[in-house]
Image (cartoon, rainbow, N blue to C red; front, side, top):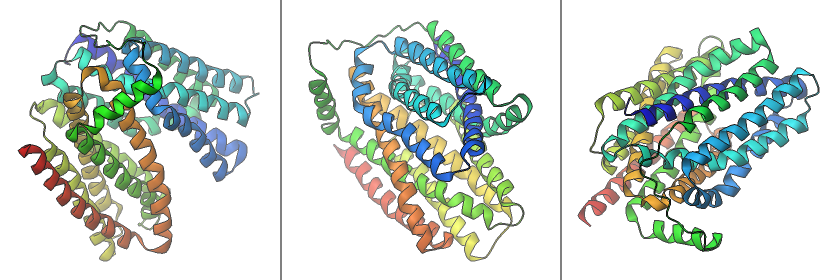
Length: 400
């Protein structure tokens, strides 16, 4: 591990994210049992996402104003209390749908402050040459939780029941908060004075980003990557259903291999500890993912229906996602002025939160009008064109 401060941060993240996966499984099952309504599930996901979208830039300003360690500690405590309320209501059998919606919105509100603070604190506790390793280890958490979380979450729900899983998730937030409390920040870049109003500080952040071509490039890459990742998310259930065997099991296998790829890619980057990160390498990861989209189209064209071939492709896509995430986050941390990290990372999170729902709607409609083969081939060709354009932009950035 890099240092003890990052170890505290990393350990808290893996505990809370694993708890989140348990919570997501338990909550989805509770809503299904209670309402048996896909529209209710979709409405809940939308209501839970809106606060993060609406508060993104404001939360970034506050992240630059306040101490990031304090934000992590306080937000984890609040989220832990909110989830405990759900657990207690479920335990006494008075939990209602409106409780879940209200608490979900509140959790999203708090998370809007947590996410940029989590990303912005890394430059305060990690040296610049270790950014890539730190981000690789952070992404490794997502891979581990993507594989282990749904599996053990489902087992926990069946063995212990919904209420106890909710309570366990609440406790996981308290443990993460406890660990964050021991972080010692050696480089506190919080120099913003509260004499400016919020609007001036938001505009200051926007102006900074507009004048930084490399940051604008990275934000463009984030939007493109999430847009095409959304196409895969929409397509995956239909792809799994058309393969040999049980469609639900196939979907689980494909999602599991995506998580395996995330984990493996993150581990390789962390072990290698690459200090020289570049925009060109970042685009190469996206280009490799594009190749995988084309492979899926070819497999569909030749009517290959064994799930194992697609599992291999999913693992490669997961590794590409891990590499792209680690590199764009490391580059953002390198190019962003320390007093602007909250606003820049809140904007990158906002772009992600908007790109994915747009992709779900867009590619959902396209899949109704075409086939998996056509959609994956179109995505592959589209990414080839976009990657060529991005490579040209990288060449222009390097010559400036």
